[in-house]
Amino acid sequence: MISMDLKELDDGKSGRANEPLLGIFWYLDGLWITFSLYIEEGIERGGTLYITPYDHCSCWEELKEKGKVPDVDYSFYPRGRNFYNMKTKKWHFIGDHVLMDDENRREELKSIFRIPDRQAVFESNIHYQSGEDDNEKI
Image (cartoon, rainbow, N blue to C red; front, side):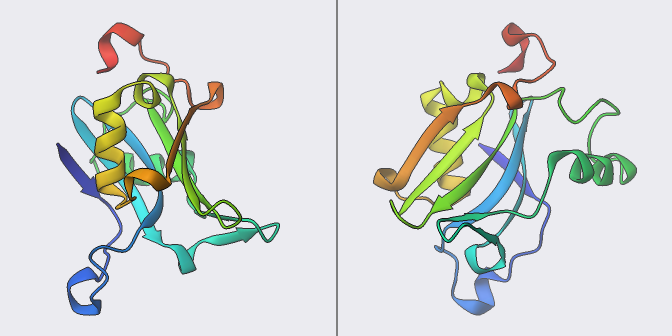
C-alpha cells in the first residue's frame, strides 16, 4: 500500500502516531491520496458526528494546480470520506462501491486513518461513484 497524505501531521513530536484520523481520500492506480486531520480539528454536527472540513472538489483543484494529480475532474477516481459518530463510537467510511466492497481496500483505509477493526463501518454511496469504468479502477 502506498499513500500520500497532503496535510502535515505532527505525529512524531506530539506522541499522536496512533490516534485515529478524519479525512477524505481518493484511490489512483494503487496510490491513496488523503487529506486527514485529528478529530478535534473536525467539525461537530448535531452533537453526534465529527466530520472533516475538507471537500473533494476544492482539494482536487489544489492538487491539480500543484501538478500532483492528473488533469481530470475530482470525481473521476474512486473516492470517499470518513466521519466519527460519538453516540455509537464508530468510524464510518462512505465512498465509491469499488472501495467499500473490497476487503483489501477497507483494510488499507483502516490502516491509513488508524481505525481499530471493531470501530470501522463501511458504506457505499452513489454520491461518491467515480467517473472511471469499474473494470479499470482497481
